[in-house]
Length: 104
Image (cartoon, rainbow, N blue to C red; front, side, top):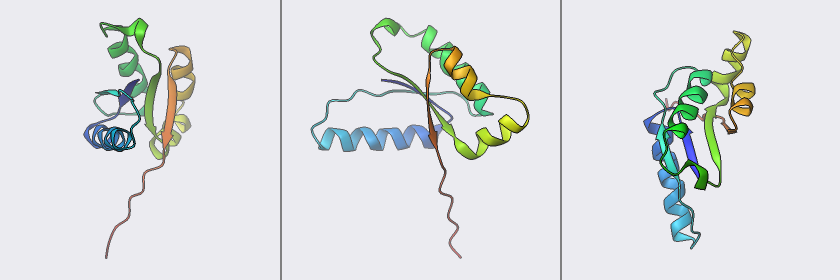
């Protein structure tokens, strides 16, 4: 699977998921590419650019882009529709809801 992510924390999360898959005996290869943060639309566009440059792009079974739900909603309000862009570029969006808990 090719997965475009916003940044380092998302990449670390997917590495953790890959480790869990390995421990469960699942054979899943996650080719995770950070796409320099920014708004959700730019993450989709950078994912598509990185996928075009991938040496084995035809052999990729799934093309995913991880998007933060809270950021994407603000982008849509500003007229930047990452979901439509992902569909146009043949990417499957995976929406994540950040859980930002502050301890007092």
